[in-house]
Image (cartoon, rainbow, N blue to C red; front, side, top):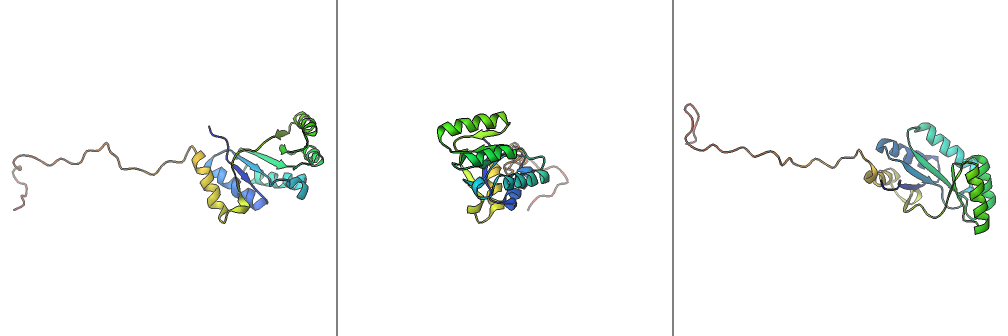
Amino acid sequence: MPPSPVFIVHDLAQARIVFAAASVARVPIRIESAPGAAGHAGAGWWAAMIAAARHEYPEVEAVCVLDCGEEPGRALGAIREGIEAIRCRARPKARARLKALAEAAGVLFVTGKAGPALDLATVPEPNAAVAARLAPHNPYERPPESPRRDRQPPQKSRGKPRRGTLQKG
């Protein structure tokens, strides 16, 4: 199975768009904050936003990653807040300690990029863009019907017409 599609969201409205589309498509997703969002809005904001989206769409399987930039203190705050997954690009020694603390707290410590992400702030029609990104991952999506090829065209009758049938004259 291909990796889950990744979406960068900046607010609750965008999170709802992604969760709603994932619910319809029945596709697991990965939600990420903007780079360094923990320093701008804080871990509490992220926790409340994700909790609201999960409450509205409890059936959606999602990993939600808060980006803490290069600030170990923001990452520690996110761990204390109970954020499920964080990314921090701190120096290697600090990153190793943060990873150990995160794992001990049951927090996923994400390194590197998750692959191509759709940043909802950069698309004019977020609903359509999210649906298009999810479509290839949807196991229930069916290609359009194609003409059936197993049916044979009606055969022309050969020979003399039967008695009582009309003939073209």
